[in-house]
Image 1: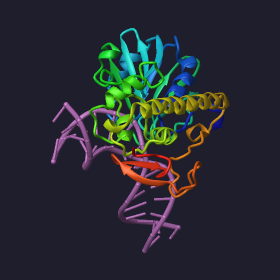
Image 2: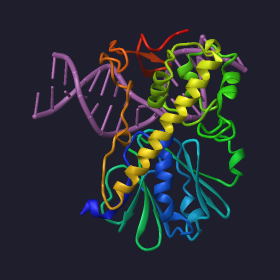
Image 3: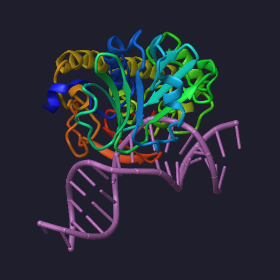
Image 4: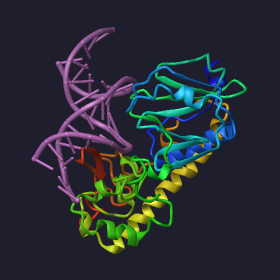
Length: 286
DNA sequence: CAAGACTCCTGTCAGC
DNA sequence: TGCTGACAGGAGTCTT
């Protein structure tokens, strides 16, 4: 019963590829549709959901759906809805929305034809915000760095950004003001792939290494988005549970397992309060 | 200013 | 079996 009513859902810890895939997944269901009703069951997300959101959105048509960093942006005539999935949030398309409400289904956006976009977030690190500002000037968006898959994110850009930084390179590539969308898991993977030690200071990484790193970041994200596309197809009319789109993680979570290149046991540590995994032999500090 | 610590929250899992 | 505590993580904010 439950499985049949869920048209589209993805369960993950959202990093950029997962948000992109979610955006593509909900797009055809939302574009040019009019919101019939907004049901808020739980206001307490990272920031409280504005209580006048139903009044603002009901009977309003959706003009566009896009993504900036890990925000999904839904545009209306009079403003934008910003949705961030935090780390446990996801969006699902549901039929017959009055049925099958489960724990942590916090918000429903009811659409025509008994369709419903539903926001589910157990840990409530996500957010749903409304703004009438232009999106570029929104305080949460205006300091964001370039999209990692855009041409603005390249070796010379990143090298310049790192030049005066003494923090660990891993912390820096996770800094959304430097480049958006690189979360903990993909930062581990990208550093492993480019053979850079995560503790290397930003200002000691060479241009050559930066070039490798930029390529690795693009590659790991692209691969995940492609896998996400596949997942998307599989998820039509099904209920599912991919873990990171079943993308093979080579380093993350592999403490004490042999490195795939040199068989040295993978080590772990904390950098900036985040779990970090690296091969002490392949990933150089120089 | 930069860097690092702290904070929000709940599901999961190890240990007793 | 049930309880307790540690842990995971995005990113804004606070402290150093």
